[in-house]
Length: 387
Ligand code: SAM
Ligand code: SF4
Image 1 (cartoon, protein in one colour):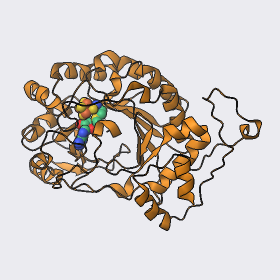
Image 2 (cartoon, protein in one colour):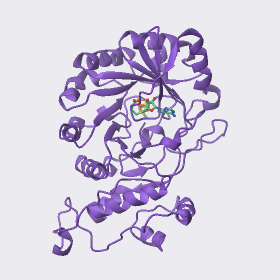
Image 3 (tube, protein in one colour):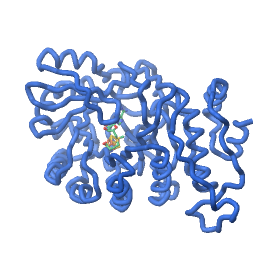
Image 4 (cartoon, protein in one colour):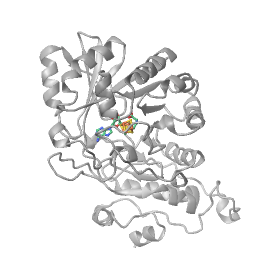
């Protein structure tokens, strides 16, 4: 019956029903409050009926069926990007029509519901977040939630190409820390990997971010035959500039030209090799994400490893991901999703609350990546779900 209601309300897509049916059989939480009267939406133009104006928004924490509390929301603000990294996108990507993309007002309303329900950290991502028009308007609005004490942190993941333009504004808006993706320090290889990026522009952007006072973490997707020979150089370069470095295993998300199997580099093996040359000490340090950090005695810096392929960290997963069209994915590597755009547009904040409750029921136990499989684990590219 609950499933019928959810289909009726448009919150549940046909595709993940199997998962939903499976999960509802073991579900222990109380049924969702599907009050058909509660359709007030502060962003809709029609006036709310008097009877529903006094609703009390939910403040219940977002806890899934496995007892994991969601405190971290990643928001993809666009699926577009000025690069086409070989491991992330196909050469000829079809981007979404702009009218399908959430407005800043909608993103901010959705973020507010998450904050009211215990989310303490937001990360803006994409696509490339800094290529969305007027992006700083959104950053400023969300940054205010940090200065007001509602959020611990607002941060973003960027390819760095626009940092020269935006670094100072990001700091003014309350951003303190950013992740910049950089897979090589070789200009030719950089243009090959990104298909259209210029290394110099990104390095200038990183320098501008540093100068503006942003703490920089470099994200490097480690790939056999592509950049595995550069990892030590990258470590020395990053730590030499005072930046943390995080190495990431490539994940099988979306069809790309790259042979993921051939390029897969297990980071466990790499870490053991690094430990032969550097003194690595495990740190308890966490940025709220999945990386495991080590200090490097010789450089004085920190190195993190994100190992979705070789070591599953799902048991401590505290995050969910919102796409630029308002689809909430509860796991990067699974198809289960809840349509927050429909929930918001049709039923306002009540609709959002119900959809978030549903999302907690649907959040999968973990991803199921296997690089040896011919097909990607999920069809959507990382640029859709947001890294
Ligand atoms: N455009 C921004 C950037 O590149 O930083 C933000 C979006 S990008 C999708 C976020 C992160 O995902 C980047 O660090 C990128 O290297 C990583 N990424 C993209 N596709 C990936 C894949 N298939 N496996 C692992 N990491 C991936
Ligand atoms: Fe763009 Fe980031 Fe994907 Fe590269 S990894 S194509 S920069 S979204």
